[in-house]
Length: 115
Image 1 (tube, rainbow, N blue to C red):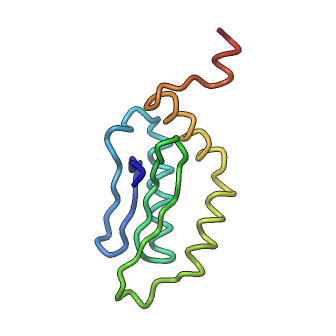
Image 2: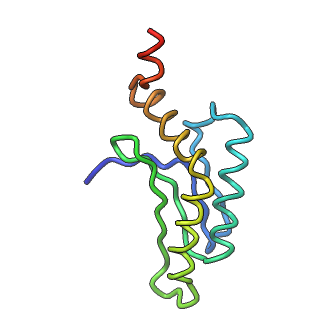
C-alpha cells in the first residue's frame, strides 16, 4: 500500500481537529484556513475528513464514516469535496508544491529557471 502522510483532519464523532506538527512551518494563516475548512466540512456532512499527501506529493481529501452512522451525508460529502477543490484550488496546489519541495526535495520548474 502506498505511503501517505496526513497533513490535518477533523473528526465529527470525537469533535476533534488534528494538525500534523511536521507541517508547523506552514504560515499561521494557512494553518488556520485548513482548520476552518476541515471543521466546517465535518460539521456540514459528518464523518471524518483527512488531508493526506500521497508518495508523489499529490494532496487528497479523504472522507470516512462509521458504519453505524446513518446520518452521514454521502452526496453532500462528495459535493462539498468538489466545492473545496474548486474554491481552495490555489491553496491546495500551494500545499502540494510545499510538500514536494520540503519533504520530497523536488525542485520546482520556477526554481530551475532561476538557477
